[in-house]
Image 1 (cartoon, helix red, strand yellow):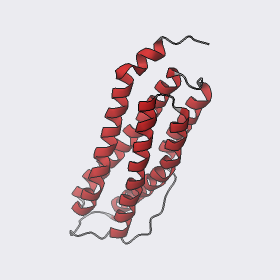
Image 2 (cartoon, one colour):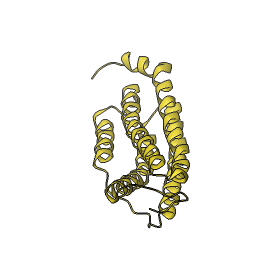
Image 3 (cartoon, one colour):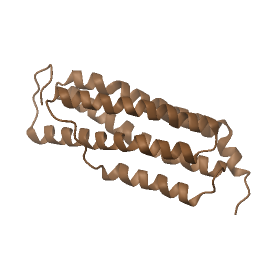
Length: 175
């Protein structure tokens, strides 16, 4: 692993770090498409806007990860992330199992999106900490804005749910 700072770490730790970056890269590339689908499935304008904005941010996340790979003298390469694939699959299931144009679907989409955000927050946070520990402060600096954007997306989703969407869903008639 090449970086501006001298690093002291094991090759096993380095490979783990790279594997996690590859999984994030795969996830962010796929999330761009997932967010398009979630936007199409959502009916609340505020929620649709969150998905549009976060898609734009996610495209930046891909570029930042490519910058990290370049610093590491590695080609940007994705590795399927089983954890996020499962969360993406849950999102598809939510769409299939809820009524179109309903607040209930929107609530389910918020929950599905927050699960993805929490996974990403945990992974980016851990990798930033690990990068600092390994002496790769330049990599940590590149990843930090992404972590902050993920946290902000999560807060925005919570605000939408708490701002009336959850209540609206409780008042819908059940099928």
